[in-house]
Image: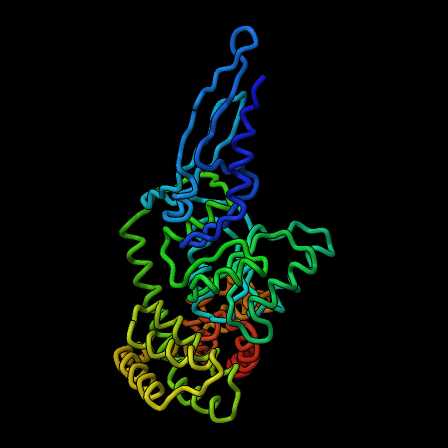
Length: 405
């Protein structure tokens, strides 16, 4: 009898294991599925001991994996193909998944963006502000025998413990959760480094809905699909853009001077992180000039050099241009009148908010509208909107004192 139908696919799948990441970060395998490369052939007995080779599916998989990130997932039942997914995304139908995602990310704007996107897709997000916090959260679940996270999004540049160090620690403690690098640096050498440190995939910042969905399809199965309301999506995008601009112009008034000071004092790690964050935000806002000048400073610092005067002047110029353009977003509405405040209602809102902040729960965003109706909360609202949980908790007692509640 000839070889069984899985032998050719096993050989091809073995060949695929050594394939590099594709340009979109497609890993050389997908969990729980057999990836059939080039050709899939089933060989069945036929007649009196003879065999017939029946080709039921043929695709140049390695080509598609490397150049288009196309994936074909195949499930078998009784020798027949019963499920396929060709990687094509219909953006008029939003997939809804079920699962938990951990994101290690120190930038509040990125936290908010990912939280908003994943919540629409039915995924619960837990945020860790650095790699150390993320490792601790995973370790705690392992020790308790709790359900692990289904996926981890890992920023690379973070304070305390960066993404590379965190990935190494996750490997040491025996975590089996897939790790996807969130990074703006997707050069081949860097992607190989992510892979070498146990990250199965990467997602390039800034990413589109389609790129995010394509990534999630590798690790989750949709429970349903929902029609996308284009008008509502556009309105939501406009709101998110306003939040992004407001946050950027508020928080980056002194960033250039902070980078200069860090360079002058020899704190290269801080200067690098500030330049890296600035580059990422410029990319999110599609401000190419600022992104390029921040990249030049970041690259110099990465190479162990101080940025040149020309590079710093370009950064100063481009940052000022963006800040001037976004200056109208600094305007704020007047606070509520203390004389008209409903203290009972205000006390209830603040009492409910406190444990949510202590739990680092993104549900704090649900209280922003209510907080704006309370006097003395402008600073508190700003911290809540940026997911600055600890800072918000420090402000909360002062608000209560001013309100005498």
